[in-house]
Amino acid sequence: MTIVAKIWRMKFQAFLTLFLIFQGAVVAQDTSVPEPLDGREGRELLLKNFRPRPQLKVAEHLRTKAAFPVVDVHTHFFYKLRSSEQALDDYVAVMDRNGIAVCASLDGSLNGRLEEHMKFLWGKYKERFVVFANVDWRGDGTEDDPASWACHRAGFAERTARELAAAVESGVSGLKLFKRFGLEYKNPDGSLIRVDDTRFDPIWQACGELGIPVIIHTADPAAFFDPIDETNERWEELSRHPDWSFHGENYPSRSELLEARNRVIGRHPKTKFIGAHVANHSEDLRVVSGWLDKYPNLYIETASRISELGRQPFTARNVLMQYADRILFGTDGPWPEARLHINWRFFETSDESFAYSEKVPPPQGMWQIHGLNLPDSVLQQLYCENACRLIPGVKARLVKYLQMESEEVQP
Image (cartoon, rainbow, N blue to C red; front, side, top):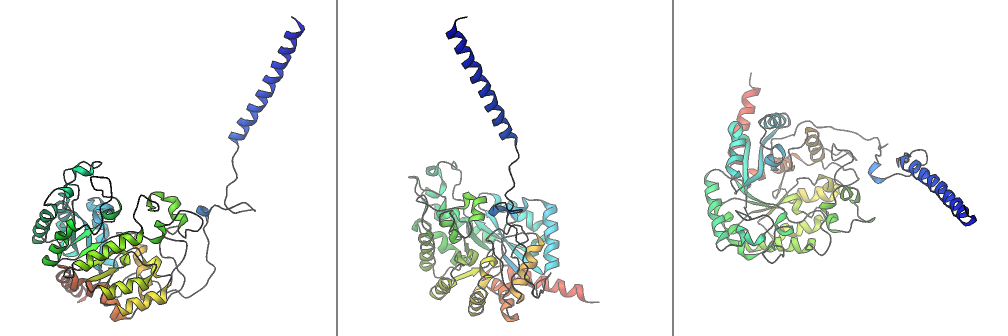
């Protein structure tokens, strides 16, 4: 073997040795267990691992039943129970224990599901549920081809109005609009359908003529329209659900959506509108109060917003007192029973600094809430009286519920 060949052989062996050493180091590094970022023993802490245990000691006045009979105007018994008879039986038992007389299920789509959903709820429990219909925007069109959707065909709004009239004849009590109207449904050219698109005015007009309210969910919490960065107060929640973010040029601004909704409310003064989730502006109740002053046909409900109301208890209490005849109770349930107990505690006591959810971590912001301690007269309006006045079918069901309750307590 020549000297040159020997030198190249030695270089190759050295290179191979270093390569094997490097590979071994990489393998060792890959198989090592990283330190948990749990904040213990001087380690860093990931926000998603933050589980603070409050040291504050304050009075507690727990509630396991509402002080007065309740009408829950915002529930989703199709989407959450999926037609399970056992789950329905179980939740009616929860309603009984908590004093919930009537629930409004908002899941009755006019695409054919309405009749099925009514049959599911009313088979055994017709006196405990009212049902809201939903507009069938797509019809027989293809999901990813908006040009084929029914809502873009001539006469769609008038046909929907006739369908609603038939639904009311069969016992439907209202119409629910989901947030996808304004944030997802598109025109044939790919642009988003505007909430105040005048093509659909005959639908809102028909609701007024039929005497049914429209629960309208427009936009979402303010944080969902901000960048998901270190300044977003709900970063932890959005990091788990980035698809909940509506920040960016692909979506209208939150103010544009809410202003469009308000234009619809203003154009139809004879139709009663219920702004879902405190009209989706619970972060600024001064603005909500201005809307209530401007639009006498606007009402609001509290579903999934005690987390926001409870961190501004003085302002929230003042608003609920001032507009006691315009605010309805809702949960966005059915939820676990523990969540209901928190609602009763929030509205009925002056307890300080308690969790707004049974979940860990809390789902809608890393904070705690304070109770409102509403007077009985306001609680009665919030829990049931306003719903009886506004939603067809509720008052008759409540009367039967009270009769049943009275019969059960008699010796």
